[in-house]
Length: 125
Image (tube, rainbow, N blue to C red):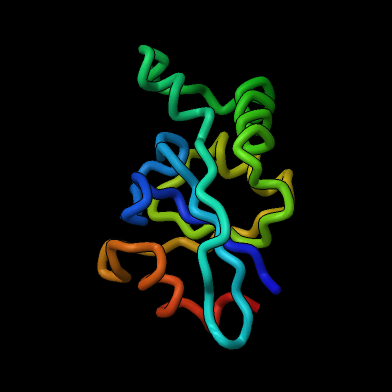
């Protein structure tokens, strides 16, 4: 069983382009028969941007650590992959530090998490 996270807007499972600002992470469990949604976790990092923390963050060890705390708080530990459209360097380093593999997609791959996962199933090994 493979666990996959996708940054989404809400229960509609519409994919959000900016991973660090996505309101939620949809967590799917995938096997040879397909993927099913098991959790919808709030992204604690998104709240900071709602309250004026929207400045461009420098790529520093402190910022990576800050993002790593949010990765943990958003319950992404134990996830094998994250499917993203765009990812800043701090979030990328924080996810890699947690051992999460990154799969980059584009809008042409789909708008909803479940449809994108069907398309990229071969990459989830």
